[in-house]
Image 1 (cartoon, rainbow, N blue to C red):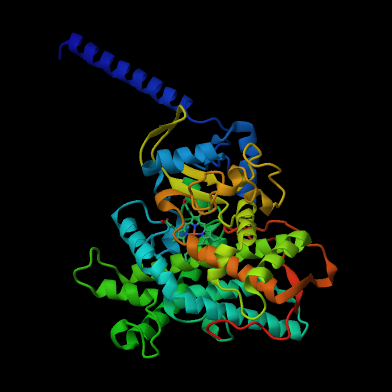
Image 2: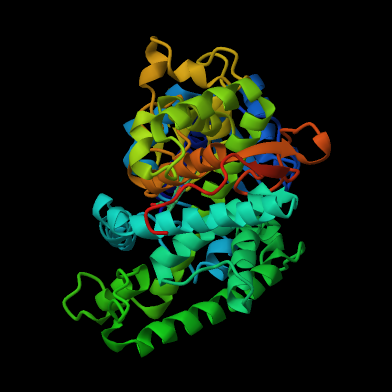
Length: 509
Ligand code: HEM
């Protein structure tokens, strides 16, 4: 070949390489600011046992949009309402996916679920079923008697303990209540009781929440992939095997029932009935496999039980810590409901102070402190470059405590939602980015209404029917424990004394 042609080709190649290096560098230099990373692990060592707290501290130094590296995974942390709006609303379509991990692979049937499913047609289809068939207003109304009955059973359990002057672990009782409600809506069975299945189900819920919240090195550091250095993957496989066994048993019981619909007792159709009939329908928009059904049930359990129970436990703890707030709340419940009947969901709109307590609890103790998304395409936000496949952590917990938006942010003051300023209009459904305990946008929480019903009625019933005293006269602490759903570090152990000679009646009693 002519020497001139070779030289020309080489020059083009060199020019192209130089251009690419510069281009890549300039792209990188536009990444959001962040701390210096260590080789291999990046910033994993900075996150500690409470990543939402560690990320908040870092954001005070590096700003509301900060870059961190978890092993080799480029991530950004979003810590202010304005920045959250950019990601969850303005550029919503680019951040509507979720990252895959060992937890989704081993526990969620290889992402056959929809909470962690990548954004796409399958997720859209499952979300539609969830919104229309399980958590729609109509379906929630159908299951109102179930929630009524379970609230009554919860009250009876507390009464029994109080008569025997037994110490009550409030959190455990609330988890049983939440598991029973969700279990009856999804599978028409109860979770609490002495039988093996019930105990196993409640145990699994806790283990899944704990394992999903772990930072598994194999997800972030390429050389650790499949080594399972921390032993989490082994635990995930074990949890999966036990959950699958339980689900198979329940699915087979449903299949044994004629037609897969409501049974002879006339119980309402549960989620398994609905999903089975979709899976048997040849004309359905998408074919649902048995794995999809089991993964869907897992999603609803994992996302709906612990979260609802833990936030109610936090609300109760705040009332125990702040007797003047407890007194005001009780006056409201007594005024609206009285002593003849147990509080009902239809009373909630009349209990404005109670609703403010629930909002304030979700602001300070959101059980989903960080929501995780993943970008599906390159994007520019506030002048910074966010490449595709970047992991996005929206620090809901830090946003609820941002002193630029909240006065005395660390104080529990339900009154802030009752004053005449803009605070009184703030709701929790993802429109006001100062307070997004349920996330926002198309991947926001589909269980918001159910969660709010649960929190408001359980709390109101506890206030209405019993006087509460912390066991041994101890002071209640507000220390956060470890786990995905922000549990309390220490249980709330109380003695309850009935306020009335007998429990007020409830509709389905
Ligand atoms: C106080 C209780 C609850 C809180 C604070 C809460 C919070 C959240 C948050 C922060 C997200 C992520 C939102 C986002 O990325 O923008 C979420 C997602 C989800 N939640 Fe909830 N949740 C609660 C109760 C429930 C209940 C009762 C259910 C169902 C029965 C439920 C089902 C789900 C599901 C299925 C998703 C995934 C949605 C998707 O990816 O499309 N949650 N929740």
